[in-house]
Amino acid sequence: MKHPFSNTIIAWYKQNKRDLAWRLTTDPYKVWLSEIILQQTRVAQGLPYYENFVNTYHTIHDLAKASEQEVLKLWQGLGYYSRARNLHATAKYISNELDGVFPTNYNDLLKLKGVGDYTASAIASFCYNEVTPTVDGNVYRVLARYFGIKTLINTPVAKKEFKLLAQELIDTKNPGLFNQAIMEFGALQCSPKLPNCEKCSLSDSCMALQKNQVGVFPFKNKKLKVRNRYFNYLVIQTNNQETVLQQREGKGIWQNLYEFPLIETTTEVDFLQLFQESEFMDFVENQDFTLIELTPKSIIHKLSHQHLSIKFWLLEVSDWHSETLSLSRVKSLPVPIIVHKFIEEYWENGQDK
Image 1: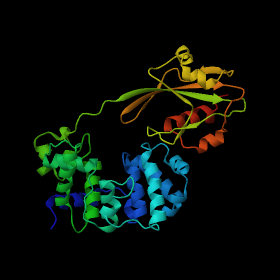
Image 2 (image 1 turned 90 degrees about the vertical axis):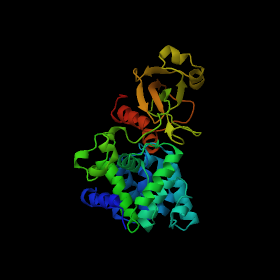
Image 3 (image 1 turned 45 degrees about the vertical axis):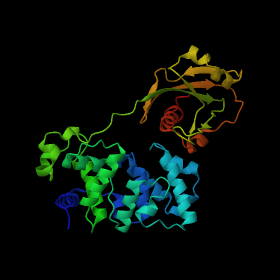
Image 4 (image 1 turned 180 degrees about the horizontal axis):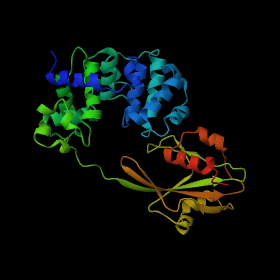
């Protein structure tokens, strides 16, 4: 027997759902792709990436055979690049170790790299009809408002509490349908800001609405302190219009992506201050160059817990003491979106002429 909440949510969904490509399939490969892409990503932004991936890599074997560089390039602009690296690693594992066959239950899906509780539940319920609820930000918001739950949602105790509640509410005969419905309800109807409560099919029994507190739910801990960083990209340009890119290493942001040689400073710098940086002088190695400040005003690039103040500096040289790349080669490499935009605006629009 379905809970009245479930009946209402599913009825709403059947009338209001969006026609999205990944809802037309129970292929775990495509469902998995869509769920990884949509982590930390709006549907409108993720849809073209999903289409590019399924059109480029028709099967998980195709994705497994791709190089990490090719996968990162296709992912370029989506952010949170660890998702792409995990996606590729999992594709290789399923292709090589499991003969291309996805695990068919929540517990085994959870063992895959990059697959957490939400994604495992989504694949298990959508593809295999397993009765396991998906709890994402939309679900937290709907349940917190409807039941008046004041538990801080970004705490471990909340994850367990909301998961248990969703387990009680789920339609045991159609778990995938219920999961799609409640997530869609949160995305379209019970939205973060300015939800349309007057036309909500749950308005008669919503605790937050009855107490006129819709805007305060769900409850969260305060955001982490944002770190400010100052990036100075050195754009080498030789006489034959070639440049230099370097691959980022380590566990920080943009791991394994390519970028122009970078000097990170503790504050924003001008010409004189840049010249005084020992790292800058070591980089140019007494080579003759002309330095041009391409972005006198820093470009602000906001990440989840970091705000980057970015400047691009042009170093015109006759040639360079290390390997240089043509523009066509540069365009084939995966780069942070801020670097991609610069390349498009500077080289492709002819601003170097």
